[in-house]
Length: 336
Image (tube, rainbow, N blue to C red):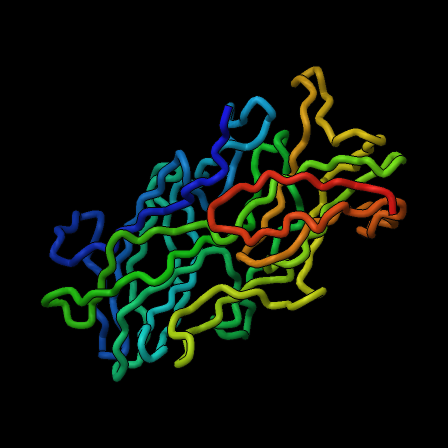
């Protein structure tokens, strides 16, 4: 049975055009008091079958080898979802940036909305919009310094959720003026995509000795943190970039249990009271496209350290990631 490994992790968001009628429960956007702000209204739809801010495994959504096949959205009713919005000119690189809060609808995972003003330079022209979910701004630092940090834990098929620490981005959206509404702008067919990818890693041991694995170290792919690189005159659109470089771009994912793997064996789930034994695959989130590899780690004195008697056969995976894809990969442990 052929398994799909690519998923369209998209949130369709429609910026309402002001000619549309608003209901009594959905008031018109507030008018800016001066020419230094623009009013934007966002109304979004989330497809519960494929799209998510928080990623959960879906019951029965595995193939015959218990590989993840599908994820679902899990917004709570009326949940507030922080985001960062960039409005910019994709010719000059001029931009304005703001924190916005998307609000989930009454039903789980169905609607996102925002209404408000964004402060801008009234002498500049803005024709594009990009929005990022998942970055956090530290107190006292500018919005441009907001960062994303990878989560601490890896999840497997036994877990009910894959990961809450992810980035969703909707980039390069056209902004259009709303007739008769002054500085009001609108954009249509907004879609959010998962940035980066998930590696679903199994661990196979051919080192000649039993190995006890407690973590997986992610090298590259923005593992050391991610930020938005604002527009400039040279690159005129915002973009997600890794903060660290080289050997510093890494992080450890805790497997949440110690797994003893004998020689010529693969880490398995063996609770036969609940399920038949199956190969475990550990979800490791790589937040931005790039190059890197995964390394199985042991635990000593509550610290993750390299294996003493084994090494990775290959620096796996080597290929560049693509947005919205689960990569099934195997970490092979061989003698040093």
